[in-house]
Structure formats: structure tokens, C-alpha cells
Length: 479
Image (cartoon, rainbow, N blue to C red; front, side, top):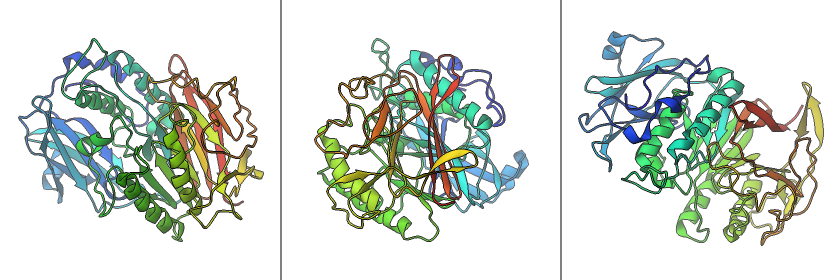
């Protein structure tokens, strides 16, 4: 195999090895065996999109599924065969493969075989029934770039598995975009500490697969990798869905993913906003939806240098009212590599505004209640905005805007956020209505939704790879 020679670990155990120790960028060679496997929700939670790559000796392939455990004979006779769409890529001897499996049955476990010409990879996954909730890992800005920094992405993956019982309880992974960050498409330049983007993607994906095999990803593509998702994943967009956008329903939770778009006055931004407005309105009016979550790469209330940019003003004015009027509960942001957590924001008017054109943000100090020994914000009536730093080596880069001494607090933007006070028990600073910090270690988040309560926990990966609990967000819709 081109990268990982060890067997894929079971979901019940944290790998004792480090996947990155088995990966050598400089000796990357494609072979006929499938590598760089990605799994996504292709068209809702009862589907899967599989993507992988091989050298040019394998030009076609397929995915075969069998319910339950399967031996070789079972794969040969299964009716669940999904054809591959193979595309030649712009690196030597590379073919990218992909297939979409639909019509999967909730609550069932499947075995799969993917590949072609006698070269296969095997795995298993379960289609959750998502009756009341789910558990998700939130990784932002992995930005695989330098070979000597891959270990930080590796440590983040290993630390997160310790929190979620070895990975067995993870239903999906929410990625905030910028999965990689390279200068070159075709070439390797070790002088600059970078390799080509296709190699970076393969390395980042294979490292993740060692810890979360077959767990589907939902991504909000970033500015460094926006156009790579169509090349390296398989997600079937419904008619009218702009590039990079995706939505799905898990249990009674609606999730919408939105990519990076900087030009808020351009046609691409308006297409995305129109699609998002219609998508969130459907979720708001659905009797089957209790929660609404948006994953957005460049969010309205980030706390680093991007959050202080003029373009963010338009993002706030054009998207924050949209989130409020459609009763979005939580917005997961990326791009700034910082930690931040706001009070719940609403826009002027009683409760959630019914207009998308209200002009002023108002934060709320929600009433709290204790449920099962923990403090929850009870029926907050607003939208929370959180960012959980960087999951890779691009950490500690925005101190000028999220400093603990407050000399350049992020609230000095061209738009006004109503001031408030966020009382926190953590060791980081306070910034008016938003707590923020620029942390020099990787971070990740764990999101759990259980019926009428939502729990989000922030973790820092300490030196040595241990997860350290950093802060929490707890929301309760009713008692």
C-alpha cells in the first residue's frame, strides 16, 4: 500500500501506533490498490459516497455492499453493486474513482468492498437510525501542508478518539474546510516544506482513515481546498444546489454546510444565500426538525484577522439575519484558527425576527437550568456562533485579534455588536459578548444532540497528545 502498511484498527480501540509514522511524503507512489478512501453522505443519511484513487493500471471499479458480515463469496453474489465513475487526475499515473450507494436501510450494518481488477479494500459501516440524536466530531482547518507537521493532525485524531470511546460512537465528522493547504498542484517543493495538493489530500485522508474508518464526512469547503472536494469526494447534489453546499437531516436535526465565498456582492454568494434561505426555511417549517445547525467556513462572528476583515461586515449583514429569521440554533465557523463562543444572538424584534432585513444584532443572556447535574441555557431564543481553532499545525496565528490582554479585541470592526458580558469559568479571556482566545495547540469539538438537548465540548490537544477539556456549550429546548 502507498501509505499505511498496518491493518485498519478496530473502532473499539485507540491505535497504539501513529499513522503519520508510517507515511513518507517524499516516497509517495500510487499502486493498483485503492488508497485515499473518503466516505461522505452522498444524498442524505441513508446513502454513502465512496471515493478512492489508484495508479493508471486500474481504470474502472465498483463498490459492492452486503448486509452484515461478508466473505468473498457474498460479495460476488450481492445485488448491491454500484458502478464507479473514474477520472484521470493531473498527477502521474493517477486515477480517481468514485461511486454512490443509495437506498440503504436505517439500522442495518453493511460490509463493503471497493476497487477493481482484483485490487480491493474492505470495510464496514452502520446506517444509523438517528431516532433522537447523534455524536459528531468537529475538525477545522487541518491544513495539511508540511511533512514534518503531519504528526499534529495525527495527534488530534488520536486525542479525539479517546473522548468518543475509541471512535465507535461517532456518527459523522463535521469538517470546517481547509482540509489541506498547498502551494502546488502537480509538483513537490521540499525547500518550501510543501508537496502537491493531490498528495497532501491522500496523506490527510489516509491518516484520518486509520482512526475513523468508514465514518461519513460533511464538509464546508474552505478557500484553500474549495475546488478539490468535487475531485476527491462523491456527493450527489440535488438540482439547484450551488457548488460546495450540502444539507441533510440526522434525527430531528437539520445540518446545512456552506463553503467559503469572499465576494459577498457577487453572483456565487447570492446563489448560495438564496439556496441557504430556501433550505433553512424548509427546515424551520418542518414538524420533523427540532434543531438547525449551519457549518460555514467563513462565519459572521469569528475572532481572528479574517473576522476583522471588511468582507465580514457583509457576511454579518447578509447571513446573520437569515440565521435568526430561520431559527438556526448553532453556527459552526472556521477560517480564523481561533477559539470563540458567543452569547446567543438574535436580531431586533420580539424573540426571533421575522424579517431578514433588521439592522442590529442583539445578544441575549439566557436563563439557565440544571439538568442531570449540568447547567444548560434554557430556551435561549437565539443563535450561538462557535469556532474550535485549528485541528492541525496552523495554530497560534491570529494573536493580534484574539489577545487575552484585549488591546486589539475583535469587536473593533466596521459593524457594531451590542456589548454584553459572557461569564465563563475557563482560563481564557473575555471579549464583551464573545469569549475568544488564540491557542497555540490543535483543537477539536465534540457535538452531541440527544432529543431536546444539545451539547458541544471544546478540547485542546496538549503536548504529548492528551485531550484537555477546554469549555462547553449546553442548550436545552425545554425541560
